[in-house]
Length: 303
Image (cartoon, rainbow, N blue to C red; front, top):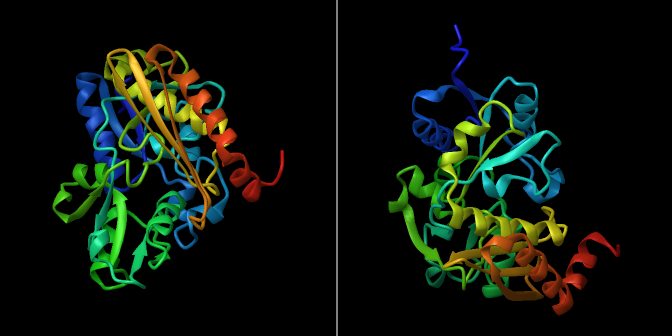
């Protein structure tokens, strides 16, 4: 019988998603109840590159539907998977302290890869930045959870794969990291390394998760997501964003790159952490002025 006072947490069923849900559950102490596993569209479609699926909320839609239907009280996501626009009635109630933001090479380091080496990644952002640095490498799509991707690497399908360092660390797989790619080398996705705790607006669960908010992470993520939203960021244009909050200010680096890596536009913006959203919007305007508009139009067509 369900405890009427217990907070039910919704999550995807991968090992990483369940680690994240349990991490939140542990911090809700006595308020947390069961974890309900929900299969998303992104979990069902595993044989098509993400950029070709063309749907926002691939890994969140079904979980959000359960939240709106009050089947769960709290949803736990990887923040980088969350669309910048939430369904009416839902809110991003908490963003806990961020893990490692960097991308990681697993298998071989970049400087160990020979021309023609096969690199597996499901991310256009990663593949485009790698193409700009190493046009001699062969990018190949790879889907599946972390264990599945590492197994494909170990079976010889790739010489290297690129994964988020945060996920590897959370799963106890930091020892598989061959090289950490600093943001100056490969700009991460907006929200990478951070968790998103979503609830109904002001509803059950909202108050209980407020203590999980980490202001520096929230300010940084707000700037990154505002930039992404202002750029109309979808899965077909590689966009990177990374912000740091220090002493009440937030500094944001942003990048828009052509999918083939042929054109790169990168810039930075700084402002008050309290105005993090405005910082993100200002950087989006600056990136457009510097040439990102042409990249966006080449993919999506003129506005």
